[in-house]
Image 1 (cartoon, one colour):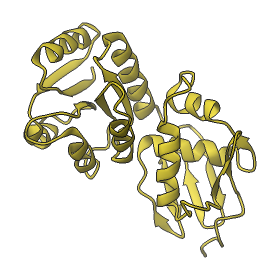
Image 2 (image 1 turned 180 degrees about the vertical axis):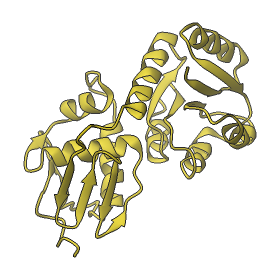
Image 3 (image 1 turned 60 degrees about the vertical axis):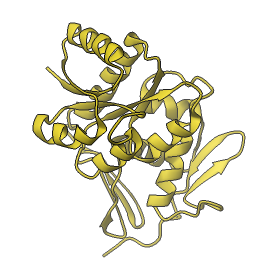
Length: 234
């Protein structure tokens, strides 16, 4: 039984979501103050956190960034409708997905299940390795190194990098990447793939203005350049 920490200061909404998730087999702990979330995570060790942005004590975006230093599980943020900046910042600060408020319980449940499936999937019996010069990816440990140094990646950042590297030398469009990351069709509006591409470029030492390792092919998609990673370490 998965344990979810639901951080929401709207008590009516929190109770409705808690009851709905519990009726679908989850254990749910409620918290309504951002200042207490860190202690809750340490004490309860949840499998997933649902995190509102507007909270007393400490806001959800700050919490998301802080939690990523110690919490390895999925973080799903709740954001107000049409506040695109919150969605982008949440992803940049380490969130794995977001749901627009008011949260439709069935959509929230589907997103939670998808995140948990991805985070708890079993290690392949024969994990694969990909190497491009100084960049090495390991599917079993879900880890990446560049010039021998580990790269700190969120779960979705690793998945996106693996998808791109698996298709090195081939332009892949946003629809393909979105389906691979989230298991649902691209709705034409979601910017999460673009945000994660930007984050990957920063972490991989690629130029944000003239990227050479993960290129944008305008009107078509993204290209992982296999020979742009420098020499392999001895």
